[in-house]
Length: 303
Image (cartoon, rainbow, N blue to C red; front, side, top):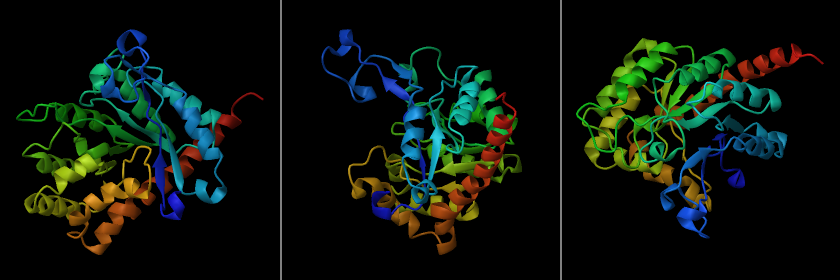
């Protein structure tokens, strides 16, 4: 894995496929969602692709990779069944689900079919399965619309969802920020409120993605505020590159480099927790539960 320089990684495919619609783009094959007006659709085969790639690795590399299931539609009441089916088709492979999206800037509007929502019962079924099996779930849910509101429009619905699923291990990707969703004035206060509420001890915050890093390190005031929040809740934050098909090592570690001003503000123990220990604790706790669930299900199946 990149010359042995990556210790542990959650590996997942992008679940949304850009449709190549001849009547929209002709012979030009769009390779990015902003390069076509055609719809995006859920591509379930991505889970088999990830599983096959994982199974091609030797034991040493497999021990450092946590594959994730993403090829499900979060508006589909059958989504939880898809997750169970993938686990039993590839036992011993997957560690969780996600990153999957509910509200995501310009992406949500392009997805064919019903728009994903935090109030959809299909999402409840997904998180019930996460809790039952012991999976880790990485949820991308923008905290707000592209145009900032006085109070982030999706935050309250997210909190109501989390209240219902306190037994599920949930990582909120990017703390709700995005390329076009900047932090509101009270963003850190909302995060602090969430992390200080013992109902949500099962929720972790992910600060991956270079777009998020640029918000965090935009000035000394911001860096100090984020550092103070992380030092207050050192076991609740995770770093990852969120790098998609990096061309080389520098492309892979770019987000880490952008965050250097933040790393310099954290004490050594907190730095290690955010970059290593928190991830290892969450996934090392989840994997034995998942393997036990798989064994129980497979043993109960007719031969």
